[in-house]
Length: 562
Image (cartoon, rainbow, N blue to C red; front, side):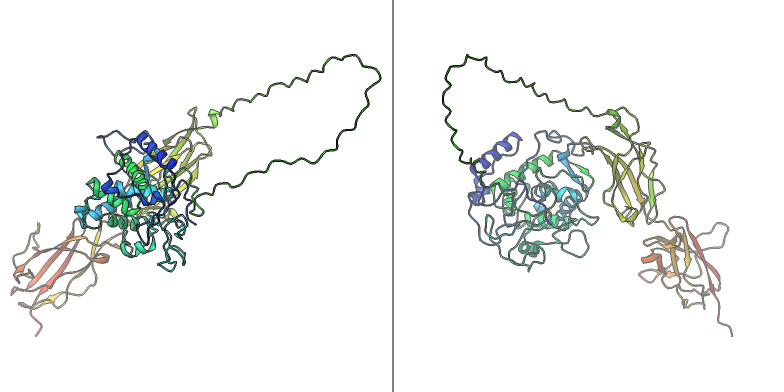
């Protein structure tokens, strides 16, 4: 099911009042002024006309019209590296933010003249999908459920008949916008790109969608550092000046500063429920008919009394005591979440493929500073890493015990070396977050050994028939890309490179007795051919790794037996 498109503009349904309100809101939020007429062209979308065919990346589908808050995340000219506790609206889910930045880097290497800023992708992602519904994506960046726009059937939207047989949007009659960046299938067929290197082009994957959107915005000779080219690019995405103003406002907002939040915890658009169909909420129709009364029987006529009774005191209506509204109950500070603190987490380091010996442990406290049990804490692995909690999860929610503490599951390092973070977030109305630095180091060979035990002999002036095969391992597992040095050495107490006996050949065919080599997959390496000079004897080949693992191999040069 796709996310509901609350607060979205319908083609042909934008009134003057809405437009005026949008302009007023933009002015209040210090959003950029309306684009120059040359760059914005005419606002046919807002006027209600439907453009034929595939006129925009999104087919001019609806979009979220929420505007940034008036309190910007940072002041102009200051650092954009804000803490996790910054403005909630400035927070972008980790995988989504990583996808935008990866797309910017990719375009910088393939189309540097475009100068695509990742904040523009973030602005478009905000109005198209609410940053993929608050970052509800899996470890590969694919949305947990499809995000689909309404059927583009010409009824309030553009008319675009099916172009993909329903392969992407599940609709074999009309096209629908698909995924975090809301591409219509016909546009995706042209611009869809594999952004995460898994060999697929999936519009529902934030890495694929972000890079594809970047390529689309950079079409032709656009330079997005120029305001006119940037306006043209955004209008090509959705041909509406209201859309351009909204994207521009978020673009300027994100340029003032953002921060990373765990996946699934991003701020959703104001009316987003996270599921359901993608059509504007219908307004109620009709009114409640007035209540009707049954015809009543006319009262019977009573003859006047023979004598007039004395006047009576009027009866006073009973006095109704005024209704009082009881004051709202004051939350018990002893049961109200107040803070989150580190409860003794050690250094988070591990070697690739191994479990971390330390686990993240936090303590929740109430407003009085005492431990608070039954508090939900969400732990998340944040950053470019394949390290995961038990079960392959990147996000886990647990509850504190009676002592206020809770410990995250064991972390298992992936194959990717480098630094990342583990976050812990608790609280709903006023969340508290902690961030823990973590790192994975690559495997370093602790052993190097031969792959066979054949005797290595050669006659003077010939080459050795067998080549030396070795394997570098760490705790029995082969280590690829291990630097290895092979040297023919003397047998002196302090060995040095030998100037006689067996040798290798360099690229020019000249004798050399030291080589620097690198192991391949699984830590395997086969040394080049070894040649014997005219001096008979027993010689030593020493093989070492940068980590200090050492192997010695015996080489014999002797004449064949008679």
